[in-house]
Length: 201
Length: 225
Image (tube, rainbow over the protein chains, first blue to last red):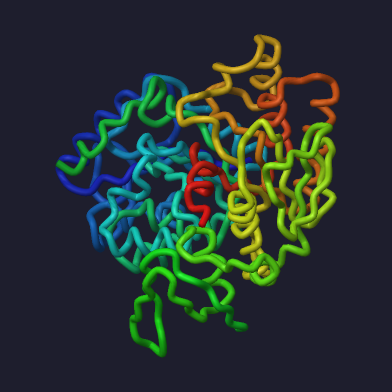
């Protein structure tokens, strides 16, 4: 039987504070094991990871390698859980590799990337208008296909060492997986509130 | 890799003998097929002659299934084969199109080129289908009858799912996509809701779906040279 659990990345004092609060809200709905990558958060299993590039991103693109679980729910530290999150694990059990939510803003593709990375990403994806995916809430299971995707995600992130979402889109183009989408309620809505950017302030 | 000539529609930066070069609108550039496909998909270059464009895109493996009884005459399919019918996969790369959605040859080709990239990675997995979302906010609980919603919730476990626009689908034929289309066509024949039955069939078939944002189709038409 697969082990399941939840992983956060906490990098810096703000992120530790945010992760602590996120866990407090999570515990109202789940008593699943939790592991924290990078900085310590009281009482939780801790996994070390060196920093590189934009803070917090290198641990995120390594999260599958670092996670102790067969099925992982990754949550950004600046999320607040307002409902049960079993659905993602059920979808993984039904044979999907990755469960994720489209980004809230789609009008200007990859607007948050620096121009060189944005241009490269749009050119390599090939149609100029990808569906952007928010990596702040994602369920994934350990598998060969996901190992390949995460390996490619790391390689892509190392090209610019900045944001992770453009790197993920480039990686998915090279290593597609069985990806199931959930609606915004699960990242920036009623089930998972997302206080975007609060962990880095 | 074989090279092809493309004509720039806007300013295009490319590499020539290791140096950065720029083509202005109207300039002809010779590039590899993969680069040509990518630029054609973005609408920044063109190959005006359909038979030469078809060579770049390997359109002999592609076709369009037009849903309904009447073949619309406002879309010129060029060299792409086409037939009337219900959803099926008669071609290696099939576009399933409901003419109630306006499209263009470029829109159809753009999706085919994304799927055609599968041949660049013969040893790995590749996208098996492309489809756009209806919107970023429409979820399964917003559409269909209570009975359809109940059926979808039983299959997937939740109705907080983005909904696909099933009027234009690009599908690479594989065992999993054959299962998807067989299931969907079977549900449609029984009168099931189009979008809910597609979600249920998609979930059960577990294909590698490349989901496109709403408005992707409109962007392709805008890029029509």
